[in-house]
Image (cartoon, rainbow, N blue to C red):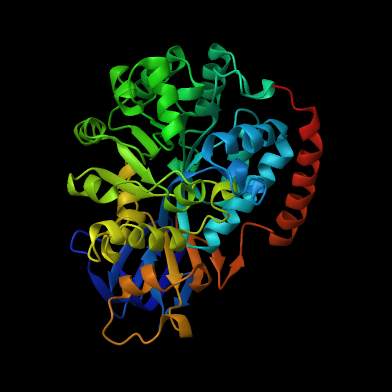
Length: 445
C-alpha cells in the first residue's frame, strides 16, 4: 500500500467552513485518510512541510493541450482571425507525435504550477495520443476530441463527416472513459455552434445523457461569433443551445463573455457550468465576462487558462489574479475578493466537473490531489496577520509550488518532475513545431 504523511503544514482545506489548519495529512493510496496534529502513522513517504502551505490542487476547466506547441505562433489577433489564420491550419498540421509532445509540454507546465485536474479540448485528429500523455503523466483530466462538421473556412483536414465525428468520439469514450479508476474521463467536445451542425449537437446531447458524461464547448466568447450564430439560427448562442436541449447540468461552457439577461437566466436555471478564462479573453480582445453577476445569481463559475497561443501560459496563479482585479474598476474593490477567486480555482472547478465529493478540497475520504507551496520569499512577505489565501491569489507565482500530488502520487517533488522527462519534452516540442510549420504551406481550405 502506498502512503504519504505530510507533517507540520499550514492546510487550506476549502471545506464547507473554509478552515485553515496547522497540522498533518495522512494519505493511503489515492485518498486522504486523516487530518490532524502530531499524526504518527508509518508511511512509505514522509514530507516535512514545516513553513509550507498545502492547498487543494487547482482545477482548470478549459484547456487545449493540443495547442501548447503553438505558443507564440498566433499573437495579437482577435478570435475569428486567430482561428482562421493561425490555429485551424496549425491544428490541421498535427500528427500523432506532435499531439503527444504538445500535451506533455502543457501538462508539465500545469503540474509545475499546482494544477491537478483539467478539462481538455483536443483537436479533430490524433486525440488518442493526448490521452496517452495524460495517462503517462498522472494528471487528472476530462478530455475529448473536438468535433467540427461545418464551415467553409475550416481547413479540409479539419472538416468532418457528422457520423464519422460522432463514431470517433464514441470510440475514444469507450476506450478511455474511467481509465485508471476514473482519473481520466471523457467529455464530448463540439467546438462551438459556428462549426457544428444541429444534427451533431443533438447527437451529442443524446450521447451525453446515455453515457452520463460532460459536454464541453465554447460559447459567447466574441461579439462577431454571436452575430454569426444569430444570422444562422435567429437566436443567441446560449438560447440556441437551450432550444435543442443541450443546456443542462452536464454542460461546461467556456468564456460566456457576451451574455444577455435571458442567457444568464438559462445558465442559472439549467445548472450550466461556466469556465471563466480572463487571460485569454483579454489577449484576444474578446472582452470581460460579467462574472460578478453570475456569482450573485449562484451560477457555477470556475477558471481556466484556455490554450497557450491565446494566453501564452497555463498558470492558474495568473488567472486568479486577473479574475480578481479586472472586475474592480467596474464593480468596486470588494468585488471578486481573493477567497471568491480561490474558491473558483478549487472547489468551484470540482463542482463544474461533478466531482465536488472527490476533489477540490482537503477533507477526509477525498482524493489526494494537493499542491505544496513555499510562501517564504521576498514577493510574498510580510506574512504576519495576512490571510494566506490573499497571499496566494495576489502575490504568489507558479515558482512557489514545490510539489504536486495527484491521486496520491507525487508527480512533482521539490520542483523535480517524476513522470515527465523535461529535457526530452522540450527538445521534442521544438522539433515538432518546426515540422508542423513546414506543413502549413500545404494546408488546403
